[in-house]
Image 1 (cartoon, rainbow, N blue to C red):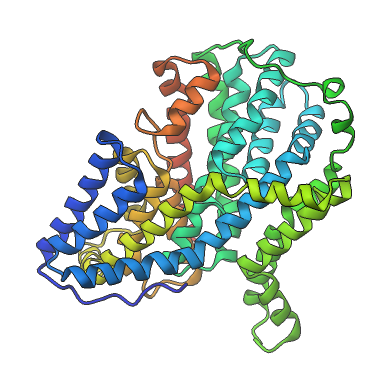
Image 2 (cartoon, rainbow, N blue to C red):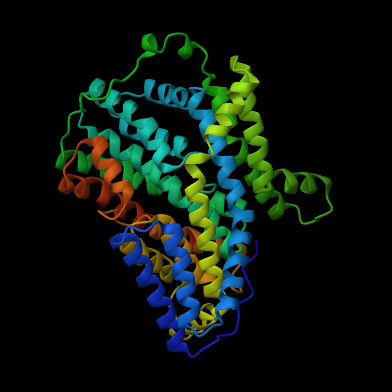
Length: 459
């Protein structure tokens, strides 16, 4: 979806700013103190924006419904397909195959780097929480065998997962920002990978070596890590590493091919470009990848068609809440757009000469710190940035998306569910979690911004 045409402000400048600030403050209070589900909080926040800005309540309702529906159509389908793909990858043992192959070929010194690669590769198609649960037994096993601190190998894997979650589609945050700002998905994917690789290196193996000296943890005994003998026959029926890698990278390759065709083939009627434009559409690319995964991760391994269908079905309930949150965020965004606050902020930013990329990052950081949600931070920050991408090139718009994504993962702390997930899995105290996980997220966010700014010098 292209960036919306901005509405003229419905009220005075400070009234619109007040409306946005009151709505964001309400989101913070409802999510962090009242513990209200973000879906409901975003609905109430959207109505608050419209009412305080002086809009007719029926107009607010219409704006919210429009944004909700557009976002569900543009992003919700992709999230559902991504969840299906990830479930097939996990249940087939494909994810285990990636982990075992990469880690099995690494020496003690290269283990942190291998774990960062594993985290990034697993994190490419999977949500952060799913990837974390999947990787924890492997992290424990690697730490035991290498006789190193759990943090030394764990932080690089977490950095890989988190960087993919914040910077690279088809994760909900980047997809939502791409949709709101009218960015090109293929270009954003390519630039996101360019930013993610050095960002993971800095926040993963390099920071992990420091954090591993600050906090020394032995792998807890409560996890039983399966080896090949314990897997039995199931271990023999896993897809090969080559087949797994080919399947995981299929949607990435299709979307990148479309982006390259758009850049290097100027004739839109050229048959090759027409084919790649269709195959590289996110919906088509993910649909084809999911259908391929049903074969490579399902029937080709001897799984019945009925069981493959059951796996697909079981992948959807866990992500229903995510789709609802993102869709409600779309409604919230549309109300913000229709009040005209985007036009106002765009004018102020231009008059004040505030760098667009820095502003995008700061807005996401502030909302992330307040709400603890990377998704809410991405939704709100990208909503406020819509007016500032007018006139930017395709590459520059993609960099704004990445700046928002980098800001959305800044300093995970006690209001973030991911903070407690990491704390409990690693068996750390709150202080140890802040010194390792929270600081890693901060390093990742800041280094991500630095690499985005460096890219902006040549784009």
